[in-house]
Amino acid sequence: MGTNVMTRVLAEALKVGDTIMPPAREVQLWMRRWAQERNLSEAALYLTITEIQEAQPDKRGRWLLVSSDQTAEWNEGRNGHPFRFKVRPETPWQVIR
Image (cartoon, rainbow, N blue to C red):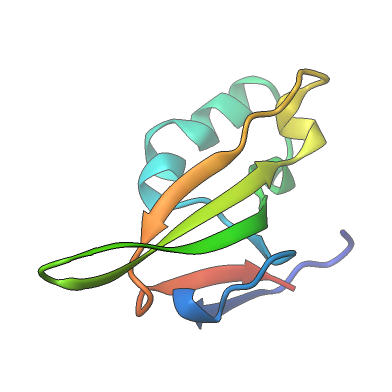
């Protein structure tokens, strides 16, 4: 990917094909540690968005359901599984350009 620049955008501006960082909670809890134990690069954490849907709203408002693929480096030759998460449309998100 060369030199990567992270840009913050609102989640509702995300689109299919964007490369993003995973949700912060997952990164902090286990993804960075798992990558470090296996000597993977920071880029192994990147997700590529494959689908964005409107999820069921709740009393606080709208949700988006984001599906994404993990990198080949992260999957280490295994078949990957979609990485899915919900996010509020107004949440700032890190996109890799």
